[in-house]
Each structure stands twice: as C-alpha cells, then as structure tokens.
Figure 1 (spheres, rainbow, N blue to C red):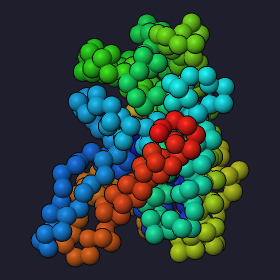
Figure 2: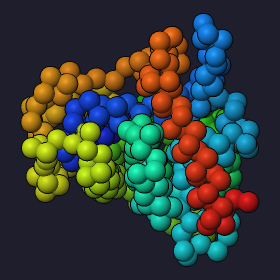
Figure 3: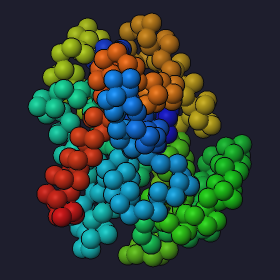
Length: 349
C-alpha cells in the first residue's frame, strides 16, 4: 500500500472509529513513517547522549535489500509478515505473507495489550501498517527467494479500467523495469518487486503467474478493491478496539459505524488516479465530514515525510518527541516479531 492508505486512510478510519484528531494523526504518522524510516545515522545530542534510529524500510534499489540479515530485520517484521498458512508444507510456503493471517492477528493483539501502553499510540500505527500490508503483499515473501519471481509476460491489467489509467500504469511499469527490474529485482527477488507497484494500487484489477512453485501455471487474479476494502474494515475494527481501552484518545460523541462509512471507503478505493489525486480524494472526504465531526486538525491533515526524520529530534526532552517514540515502538515491534511471534510458530529459532 502507499501513502493514500497508510496515512490518509488510516487517519480517516481511526477518526471514524472514535479516536480523537491528535491521536489519530500520530497513529497515521507512525503508520506511514514505517515506509520512510530509512536513515540509520546515530543522533548525538548536545548532552552527548545518543539516539539509535530503528530502520523500518529501504529504498527499492538499496543494496541492503540483498543482505539476508536486513531482509529479516526490515522486510519480514514490517512489510511481509509471514502468514504461516495451515495448508503449507514447506518452510518457504509458511513464510509467504497471507491476507489477515493468524500471525497478523496475534501481532494486533500484542499491540493492544495494556502492558505496552507506554508505546501507544506509535505502536498502534506501526501495527496498522504491517497489518494493512497483508492485504496487498499477500502471496509474496520478505526474503530473497525464487518464489517471488513472476513471468514478465503474464502480468495483465483488466480492460475494465479507463484507457488513460491503463496507459499511466503501463508507463509507470516500464519506467520501473528500466530503473530496477532489469537486473536488481531479478537478482534479488525480495517481496513484490517483480510486479512493481501493482499490488499497492487500490483500484487495480490485474493478474499474473509465478515462475515457479505449486501455482506456477495458474493465473493469480487480483481485484485490489476487494482486498483493500477488507483491509480497511480490519483497520477500523482494530482502531475501534484501541479506542475502547485508550481513554485519553477517545471521542465519546464522535463515532461512526462501519456500515456508515463503508460505501465512502469503497468509492475512494475505486478512484482511478495517480497517488496525489487519491490523496486529495481522502483529504476532501475527511474535511467534508464523511468520517467524523470535522475539526481544524481534520481540515488541515497532511503528511510531511521530514516531520519525523531523526534530525527533527529536539534537545529538550528528546525522549518525548515523536521520532524517538516511533523508534522505540519500532524496536519493540521488531523484537516481538523476531524473538517471540515467529519462534512461537516455528519459523525462527
């Protein structure tokens, strides 16, 4: 998924679930910042104390994508949570990300555990990102493996889409192949690089075939709207559960039932447009009261990728600033996934 869902969709759903504007904004920032926390430079404060950032993503062509240890520390816990499908018979099949999987629901329950409240609401935003990605990244695995390879000539988009958007997507795909897939994605088959951003476009209906594996000869039909809508409902329920236990962030008088916002969510997801226009659609829906009683924060909601960069950490009370709290929550989440969750289900020693 992209910024339209990870930030604006998350914010809208958190507000609809009864969470106050400032808390919803922090959750949304944490959710999107999972894709943007790529800086690992140690921050030395005037006091000589240091802050060690927790990396939660890499650029698509970053050489660190090729490092097995980094794949485990970054892609597995933050973007391609293993699904451990009960029908899987091999290790790699169990490692494949699955939509709304049992491990992802365990992760959600862990994030909601009151014993972790010191990390709220940043931990909630991180968990929201990981959970949402299971509805777009399913079928791919977060380590370099032939499983992720796709037959290049098998990728097709539905003719139901407008000629304009089909041309736009094709141009984006060709550009991606020229920059990355011609060598890098084939040598380092991590995640869904072989199908570019097709899984991340909410409106897209498409199909592909794997190069190898049990389903190599089958067409994998994807209707992203269906899967994204399921993901949005899952996020809404997650935020509703959080609003019940996080009294500081609850808006008792402002809560919308899923049935009241479902059609609006579906309409936004079906909007065939580039990312910037999809973002504008979410912002207009939020500011016009489609998800909540409108406040000043709702009208001005906007994501700035520099706002939580490590360089934004102030000298005064740095432990209370959002970037530091995000790094602490990300560190906790990564350790939980790698040291508790995956060992419990037999996927990591």
